[in-house]
Length: 161
Length: 103
Image 1 (spheres, each protein chain N blue to C red):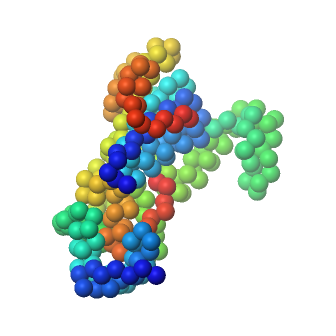
Image 2: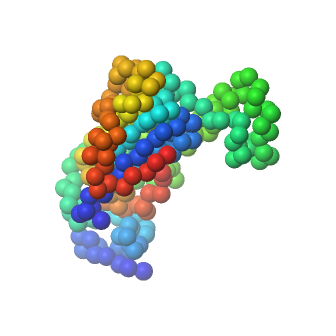
Image 3: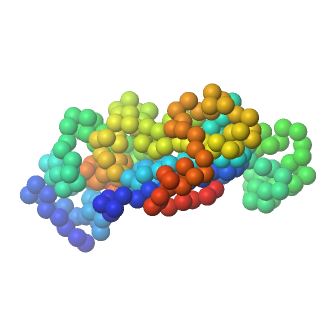
């Protein structure tokens, strides 16, 4: 299995807690299997590598049919419009994740880097959101154009989140 | 059930070569499995192996994060010690079942 070098390039384009974690777990899990892994954060996904936002990601409480109240009843959309509800639900979600030893985003990025994974940000999205390199995760491996992303992804499997 | 001979000791293994019974394990078995995986065990490796066996005996699941925070080894070093699938390789050498954690 180890002879042919497998590689995955994971694109994260969303800032929802669940989407960002899907990307992070896929990247870290790939490294754990000895697969090369690169993460590319674009559009709203940039929140996950923006220092002041990365550990404050939320899960949507409006228009999220998968969301349940403790006990299993569907989470009423109208409850979601109450101020602070999204923050509270996201906090509870993070607490449950911590119990499973799933780290906060900043620590997870550090883990992926320590595991030999690479982390990139999208140039165009940074320009659009007026983000500078200093605003982003310190250990970033670089800022890429779409062309540069494809160059790096040659022969790899690409996963879009 | 497949059996394998490691360092003159016959052990039961699963289809992927993980020991079925951690009590059949000896340090000599570990050396032999490691050799098969192309790893020469050093003190650093042994610290990880012993930690994994202690946790397994206590019925605890070990995640990468837990191992990284244990003070036994950094995540970076773990990947160097057991290249290409550190937790799985370390578990195999430690005579433990294949780890099924996602983090």
